[in-house]
Length: 114
Image (cartoon, rainbow, N blue to C red; front, side, top):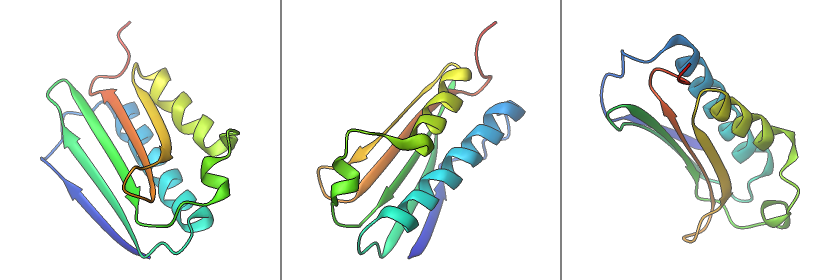
């Protein structure tokens, strides 16, 4: 599938751990779309500056499949959720209303508050 990546701004002020987590979550989301998506022709990755936080959106245009609606999230989705949570953020993954699959992650740019 075609991969389209967009960033809303420079995002140079991310903590290194946040930068690495976003990269790994994007990597897992793209891998899941390629491996598990059905008839996926495009994967969209958007990174948006939300002020104190950063948002990562990954969406594919595939068809909904049984594996996408299976209540067992698998280790990849659990790993994405855990990466975000360790840094004070959150991550969700699931079928999108308009079709396909969406991963949405929001993490504070500085990481978790200590």
